[in-house]
Length: 273
Image 1 (cartoon, rainbow, N blue to C red):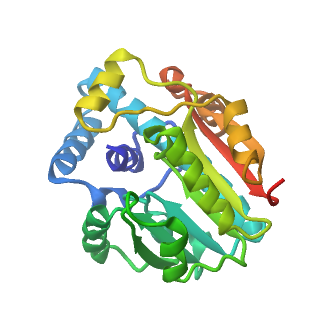
Image 2: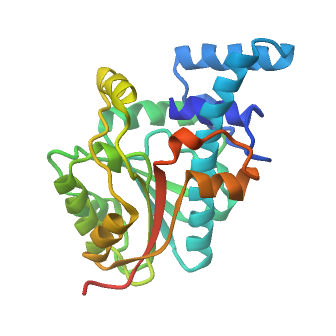
């Protein structure tokens, strides 16, 4: 669903000017490809306006979140980060589409099954800008510290960590364990970009997410998230939400009021208190 939103935005159906993610369509399922093709046909014909607007909302949500994280990543690299770790990488295409990652090691950490599928699909993409390291991890059985050490991650060099679309599915204990591992492998000056939700979904959306096997169980206020990050030595430099991204990247034109709970904290590692 996330890749489909990005693919529709890349096709031009978004309020985010100049949004591009040509990698997204390569990661679509057959059903996703049919949905994208149908949306592009409707765009060309200019018909089914209600359907078109619904697709635009989906695309805007993903385009705005992507743009916000991309900007934070660009600033982290400009500020001295020499490697990137993407936790729960899924079908993230940043290593292939962002020129600022040229030559940098990027560690994509994810479940072995998802990663096998992704590795098969990226063979059809142009060469990555980054030096991609696929790090397969069974999160229930393995240590993040151990798998990254084995993969060649350098804990003495500043890292930009991206944690997108994951925290809302974790228990508080699982989130804190991961934060401790991140802090343990972060040199001073490292950055964590963490996407989280400030509220749980409503009953109907929550039920749908449970039915498709992705119940969202974690929500934090910005203050609560700052406290969790601070407990492991991460100081929040910026905390923004969907409405902020709408103003910054879409001149406030996107209809994203129902997604106001989506947030992004950008924190710098300064060491444990």
